[in-house]
Image (cartoon, rainbow, N blue to C red; front, side, top):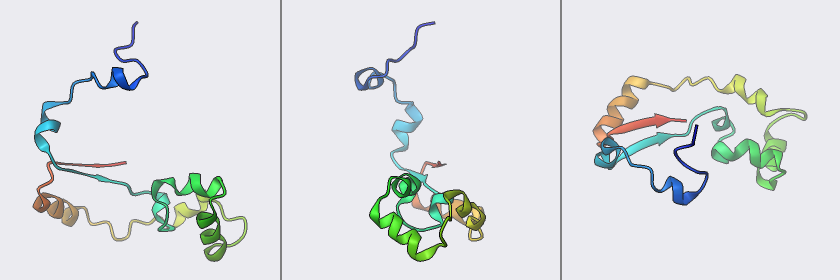
Length: 102
């Protein structure tokens, strides 16, 4: 079976954009997960910390005990302020035509 696209930008640029997406013009992409707990570095936090990024290492040293792991952050990801109905209302009022979370 031959792949439809090759692993090149030129090949990917030939892919069609879905009409609904092109028409939507405005959407919201949420980045929200365990990496949100420390509140720094976005979804790249774990990579930055594990690569020895000074800001990430310094933050963790100041705020967490020794031997604390990225997996330990999961217990603090409680989503206690998650209010899907009010979020959906806000997104709709903003004019967004789509919302996605990764």
